[in-house]
Image 1: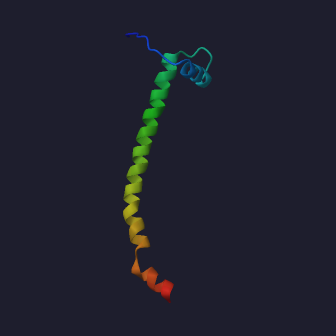
Image 2 (image 1 turned 180 degrees about the horizontal axis):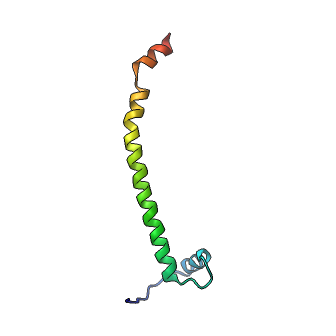
Image 3 (image 1 turned 45 degrees about the vertical axis):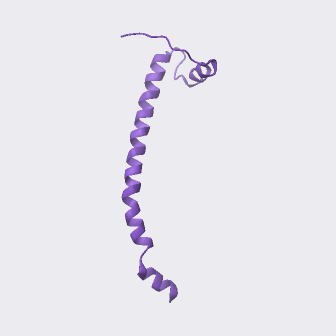
Length: 74
């Protein structure tokens, strides 16, 4: 494993400390976990967008139907 040094703002370091799952959790472990959660959320959002696009056509069909308009005028 290659190790590198990165520069972080003090406020970001403070935020990282606040979200640690346990006191001795390393920043490396924490960032790995955060990346995993982010990827999962991103994939979930793509699935939600896919469902939304599928539902748009059906919703348009339901809302733009002339039979309902005829009943509203009755």
